[in-house]
Length: 376
Length: 223
Image (cartoon, rainbow over all chains, first blue to last red; front, side):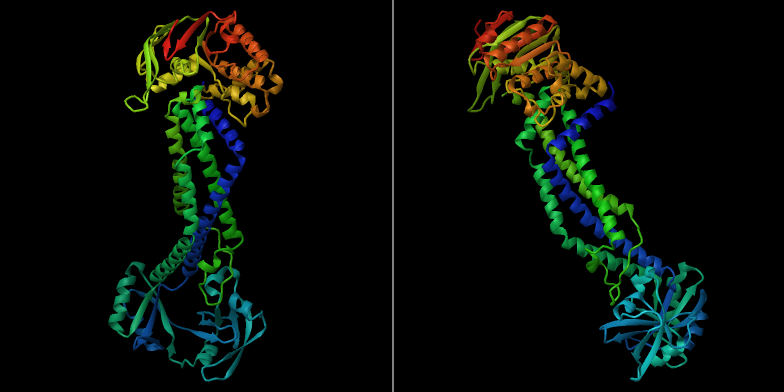
């Protein structure tokens, strides 16, 4: 006589019980899988977006300094950069050129940026996939832009970004410095803003403070704060999606409550028979435990696997519209597989545990009744 | 031997619907014999069987099984006694629907943790005893009344109990099947089982294999 055999025998009966109530079991599993799939998709997608953004922004400068005039961003004098470099703790600083361009054809904003190193020839650009897609263009095509003074400027596409960077580079155009100044009317001696590295990242806050002391008309923006903003944005979107999906959650709660408030007459009778033929209350509860475990764990993993496939293999077609929307040009990308096990564990505990409790409580109530009820 | 001393059972005590099911029952049921509790509906036969089989507790009085008093044992011990000592054949058979005859027979032994293959072999042995081997994998819903009865008897025997308790076992059987049932009981008695039955069927209490008949009325033993 062994405990393992006892478990095995009771599991065997539990599984055959579930098969006996095939329709009910399948319906229950379907609803359960749907709930886990829905919540899991939102969770996995939100996590993947945050991860993607943090990976891409990992290469971004530690700090950006903008010049502010009457509360608005204005051109950044190159002379300011020398003053920033002179601050103790600043490693490197350089001016950066970038700007938004409204494209009337697509009714969207493109982001022009002059990279630190740009190996293209004059009048050549590298564009994001969103731009290539929306303008239906590819390498070697010419794109026409209206410069600050109204003149028409033709730029040749030298390349299109890799799909991996599409989340933040969908609407990005890399351009040479001369072309940029010509297009945006930025005179020599000015940049859009400045980027800088610090020797000790723990001193970011102090250096930002010193910059505002030396150059009171500037605004330092730290990378860690930008990342925090992105996190907040994705958390907000995920939260909004969950609020929208709360109807589904409510349906699940009702289902669980229905299970909690009682057993069918048939189930009560069966528990009575089992007790009458020698099953202990703990045996009945063990059977119900395995029953709820079989349903909830099967459904949970099926739901999570489906959510994983939906998000990471199919790019989340069901929720992308709610959760993405980073660029004005809609990014089309496949998130890199990433799972935060803490969040999955939370999902496990908010679905499996209440269901198990909902199943066990009425069974416990029925199992504590005198077995002689079945004699009558 | 089972000894009952001044046993009483009151349902809904102290309420307007209070009902005295048993009153001052003092009785000795000998081992290795077939005893029949006889009486009309409502005479307390089923209640007495429930208490004897550790399925319900008496309101007052004492019960001894052999030299062990079981009246105030905790539920866990009563369950163990119920499983090891008694086998039950219910009036409605109370088989679990939707599973096979074989599974139904093995059910009472599952919590004991016996090796599944050994348990299965024992269940097949019982099916063989009742010429039911060919129906082992049949869903119990597909079996005839007599076959269901035999599965119920096999289930009652799976833990090799000392005492068999049967409540109105022939109530849903025709005469031929009732005689067949009594023949099975005869065989079991010869194998050393103590059998206690409740019945108001003359085929049962007038049978030659019955050793003792206890007449009951209104919750009391009248002879």
